[in-house]
Length: 406
Ligand SMILES: Cc1cc2nc3c(=O)[nH]c(=O)nc-3n(C[C@H](O)[C@H](O)[C@H](O)COP(=O)(O)OP(=O)(O)OC[C@H]3O[C@@H](n4cnc5c(N)ncnc54)[C@H](O)[C@@H]3O)c2cc1C
Image 1: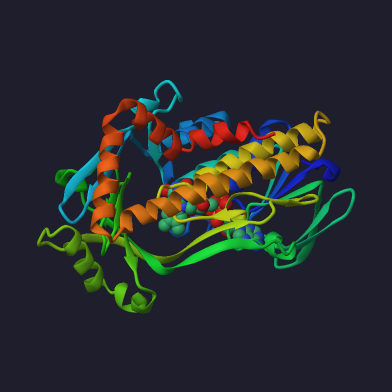
Image 2: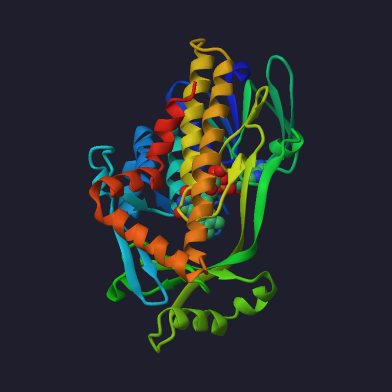
């Protein structure tokens, strides 16, 4: 289908954010050109990343017909546990059932990013308003008073220009758009790495639930369950930058796992990787017709599972505003509101909470640890406090607060 270039939106990146944005726009009648560097042959060969989808995000997936595709591929997880690793003691159990009057989905869906992009890509391919350009690498752009011209290297290796009325960078943390606009990515990078190991083993036999945050002054951990076959559990450990090569050796991975849970038998390791963790928020989310969303605008520690979730929230917020502009129901100033709302959430919710989460798990001071654990326990046991806690951790509060921002 020939698209009207003067009215179409160019979305760079077919990650969860780019695909949700493309689908929300297309379903509202807006034409979209989605540019993705990966092609059919390697689209699904992406490293394990996000996977916990919070209730508010599930509502948004439902709006674009994505939830029904994801639920059978994921695990419904109403519970989240906080553990003290030193004493192998459950500190607190939170039940999302406390949110039953706040959301139609009082649980998280454990469903990995790769499944989300696979299903969303199928929906995008089937939508007549979306021109999907796979195996096409975005290399830069220029904007003028009427629109935006993106430069791409297409599937045949040729340079090409793509014209549209707005350009959204959903390219992830290394956003070329952000760099070309010279927007500061303010924040910091943690000195230690995170080691991710995936094993086929049922940790529920040892009291764990589908999502576990495990505090320890020496070696904090996260433990999450994913649907197979075979079912896998992902364990995170802190890792010093200097020990990278040694850490990835199978015997070193087995030793870490045995230290975590001494079963006496080797674990069936399915995959492992190391990643660097950043806490950064772009100084601006928009310059003229170029707009940042998702990891391109903000990156944070995965402890708390907020990066992709808040990026998807950006996508829907932005889709509504771009749709209104293109229907002539709103002026461009609504894009300033997008920045005010979503930058506020990135700084005061996503970033602040994930920094706190890491501190909580890694706390070394014995007395502070005891206080933190006691507070968690009291919060989980009091239904009112538990609901307030879950409204925050599930990012429902962040959406409500953003709505109040003019
Ligand atoms: C180990 C780990 C666990 C995580 N767990 C969670 C979790 O449980 N919950 C959560 O909410 N978040 C989690 N996150 C964060 C989450 O993965 C990211 O926030 C999320 O993937 C960001 O989505 P995005 O669409 O903005 O960018 P990305 O997922 O990075 O997608 C960007 C897309 O753009 C494409 N692209 C990049 N450059 C170009 C270019 N020049 N031209 C064309 N295409 C391009 C890429 O190929 C990719 O498809 C985790 C992260 C890690 C590392």
